[in-house]
Image (cartoon, rainbow, N blue to C red; front, side):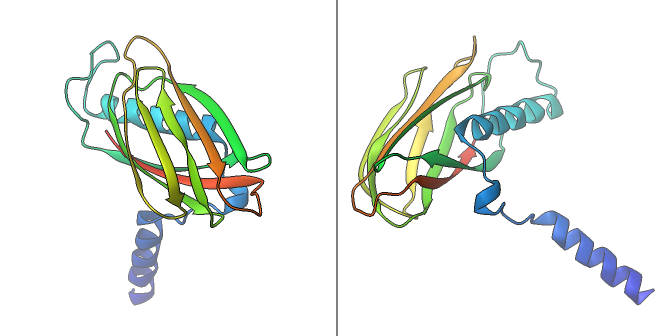
Amino acid sequence: MRFICAFLLTLALAMAAPPAAPADQVKDLHHAAKALAADIQAQRRAQGIPDQAVAKAPLGSSKTVRFKLPMKKGKGRETASAYCFGHTLDCVARIMDPDNRYSGQVSTSHGSKIKFSGQKAEQGLDLTLQTDFFGDTQFTVVMEAGEQPWPDHVLVEVMCRY
């Protein structure tokens, strides 16, 4: 009986905090944006909010995603689209790897534009990203490494509340 209780407790703890995906299993910005959009849709449905209803208040939920931004000679740019039901995404982004200083811009097709300069790896960057209710929102990340050796990709972690 003790063995079963210990096993169930261990299983519950393991399920409560899933480990972060290894860097080689992290997808691109497209997959990260789709994961956020899917979670927003699931949270809306769980709260009984119809897809046709305009976002009037935050959902009280959050999600953390990771993506790799390909870089060429220290410069990277990627764009992805996702439907986020017009919710405002209050995010904190961190460059997890490699260690460097970065400058660039994060923007959405719905008018958000956040510029940054001299951002150190693992330093949090606050982002408020507006999304469109009437169609997909295009998310664009432009980044440049400030120091050699130039990275061939950058691992980014973004935690968004909505």
